[in-house]
Length: 221
Image 1 (spheres, one colour):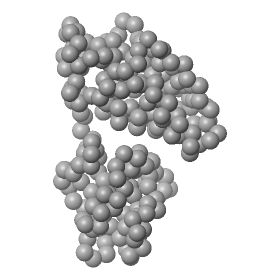
Image 2: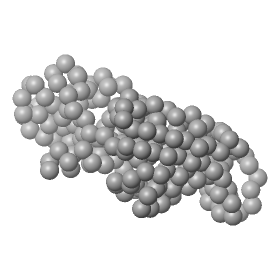
Image 3: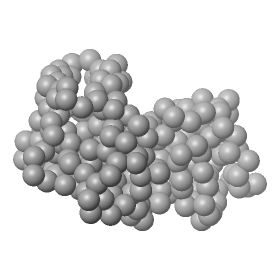
Image 4: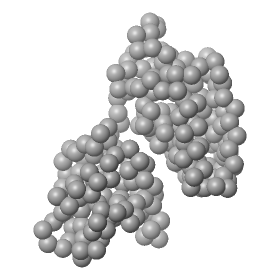
């Protein structure tokens, strides 16, 4: 039961050996470590560890690349293993054009498929892309995280992308058409996001993304 809670903790949890090798990390930490330098996290853990055996918890703003945290716990019982738990900021983020990154959605989906396929060789993927759009401005890191979380432990995944007719999302008081990523699978967990609207249905997830082609688009509010 303990391992179950740790694995699905929304906060990254990482254990290092004395040489800086990762001995265990939960799925949130696995995503985090795929972006940052593992050595930097290990050095941060050592530099902020308690002087005596035990656990220290500090609440302050810390940042690794684009990852912002509001604190951490670091602890150890002996010299063989040391652990860190980083506390994510759970406050809702205000989406602005300035903090979005131009991204090829299809390439991002394919990257997520390839990444998961290395871990889950029996997962079967089918993708039906809408080729009428390619690069759009989105929170790339967040969308990749969501895709990996949905794909994990699935045996069969079918992905559709298309433009939604008649619906709009507002960003910076401007209206944008909606791109939907429909992922048909066995929804085994509830997926939430601070940046995207996600519908958790019985046989699929639907991710709604504002279709922002350029940062200076002239849309009516």
